[in-house]
Structure formats: C-alpha cells, structure tokens
Length: 471
Image (tube, rainbow, N blue to C red; front, side, top):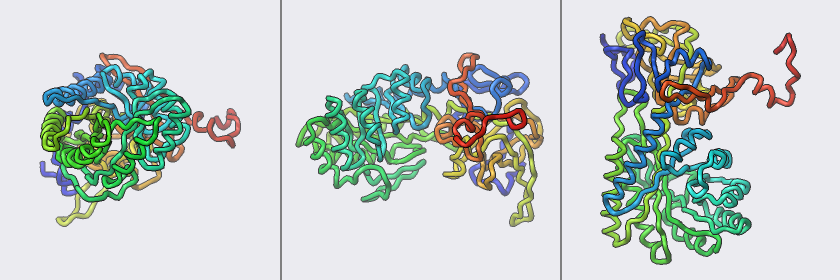
C-alpha cells in the first residue's frame, strides 16, 4: 500500500499496524494470543478495567534495567581510562516516592530541580548525600531544606546564589558542596548541535565568567567547590555535542585547578530515546565509551588529572518504561486537499490529551500509537490521535497508522510516555490528572492515585458542599 500523502516524510506505511517496534516499547511488551497488549506481564485491558483511562503505566522492570544499564555504561567506560563516573537520575523526567526508590536501589544518585522534588527524594529515603539540587531561582526555603538535610550538591546558577547558599549553609552549620552551572555555548538536539560563544538562555553563567564566580565561591568558608556543570540540550542521539561541551569546560577546569582542588565535572543529561520506529539513538554504552576516551585525551593534552565525571540521564531511563492508555471516543475521517487531489486523515479522539501529555502541543513532539485490546487484519489508515480538550492543538499523536477499523470503544496505547508526561500534566479544562500504575512480573499496583473531580473541587474555596442534585 502506498504511503498516504498527508503522512510526514519519516513515517512509512507499516506492513502490519499491530507490530510493536523494538526500542519504542518496553522490552516486556507483547501481544497475547487474542491480540491484547501485555506490559510487565499484565494485560492492559485488565488495567483499564481496574483503574480506568487515561492511565499512566510504568514498567518497573524496564525502569530498573535502564537505570542499572546507564550506571554500568558510564562506570565501565570511565573505569577503562582509569577514571570514575557518577550517575544521577534526573528526577524532573518522572519522580514519585517509588520511582526515587527504584533509582536509588539500582545505584543511582537523584537529581532534583525544586523544593517539591527534593522533598520527594528525601521522603523516599534517598540518602541525602546522593541528592543534587538544580534550579535557576531556588527559594530560601529550598536552600534551607537542602543544607539542613545535608544533600550532596547544590548547583549554583548565578552570582547572586553564592551568598544565599553560603548563608543557608552557615545557618545550618555545614559546609555545602556546590557546582557551578556553566552556559557552555553548546546546544544539542537529536543528532545536531550548535556551538556558539554565548547561548541566549536562562540557565548558568557564561564561560568567561566562570573563574570570577569560582573565586566568589572559594571565598565563602561554608561552601566547597566540587566542579563545573553543564546541560547542553535534550533528545540527543550521539556524543558529538557532549565532546564539544567537555572540551570547553575542561579548558576552564584546568585553569581553576591552579587555585585549588576541583575533583568533579558534570556533563549533564539529555540522552535521547526512540519515540517512533524512525528514531535511532546510539546505544548509551557507545556514547559513554566515546566520551570517556575524549575526556581522557583532552585531560592528557591539558596535563591535568581526569576528574570524576557526572551524568544525569532521565528520559533515557523513564521514557521507554512508560505507556499511556486511552479509550477511543469518536473517529472522524477528514478529507484534505493535496497536490494530486485529496487524501483522508482519520481523526481519533480519546479521553485524555494535552493535560496528560503536553509535549506534542509544546514541542511538536512525535509519538506512536497502537490499538491495545485487540489486533486487526484491516489495512492501515493514517490517523491523528487527538484529545478531548477545547484546543485545536490538543494532539496526542500527530501521525501514525492504525488498522482502518479503529472505532469508538477501542483501547489505545501510546508508548515512550514515561518521561515528561505525568511530570508536566495539568488540570486544563478542569480535567483530573491520571494516576500511575506500576507493573512488574504480572502484578500491578498504584504508585500515584489518580485525581477525581472531588479533588479539584476540594481545592476551590468557593465550592459549595456537594448535594444529591449536584454531586
């Protein structure tokens, strides 16, 4: 069958629209004898029946395996050059009490970006020394919590934060380890990167100001400078951008060594995943090996010791572990004019949308979709899966192929939704946020309760008490 002319160039017509492409779905995902999708040993139709839809499903085994593999990839790569690596799980991707525990139990430290995320990590029992705190506008309360808890690292984002963190540390009688967030001028996305002298963004200090802020830090008795930190972008498929960032940071790192100890360098995260079958990120072990060799060579050229190198994968661990379930409400074929006449796009409306996955609306992000509670022999049809919100940009899956008999009542599954979906969810249109169910070895359990309309009303101080007529 020829591709629909309305399909984007990267999307080809599948020979079987029931297939689950490797790398996009959790490794446990497969279809049962009757065509029903199974994740973590649990049939998704049973999950939908028990917990309703929309529903975030996280394969705990997939998350743990990816966390463990990330740790091994970087540790092994840097051990091979006589160095050491530390891996933080970037909690902004997905952070709950259980998720923080999974990451910690697999040997990772946990990176947080707000007082709330820091509180989650602490209440999960993550050892304080294995927690980092980011943010370009940290509150005094967050800094007090961080220093009083004894967290491992606070990442300084500006000159103004130096005396504030120092004051919080002094108040709590500690010497706080800090890193300096550096705007390296390298911005990477997918397989491309841009290297400039200055990058116009809110995070960090420019390279030419690092030595000045480092002097300020070293002048504070309650602060200890561990090293520099950079984050160059998101959804990065290879290591080129990291190499350029490391080159720039190590040059400054070498100069800073003249005035004192500087044991670490953190190169951040942003490692990409496959959202569709067209995406091909390099294996993390390959990226890690290349980075380790590059850092070793650069340190040898600069005649400096190889520092402990830190990394912060989040999406790479949580993203492919997640699948979101939706129930189809309506289907609507729309004829669209083309150069050769017209073509049909089938709009499939579901019971969620931009409130549970804001990424397509915010970034034009691509996702995949499959019918989850049956398989079909019908030929594929180009679909656009849309939400139930009052917005024309409320799109869940911009373009994919489903069997042409997709119909109201079908259960749909969207893979690779473990990162930045629940974390960025909202109550737009007064829609309750879905819960999260963890699956593993044939068992399912709620790790975050889904909201109800009553939950929303309970926060509205003007809401009257419910009555029989108006529950």
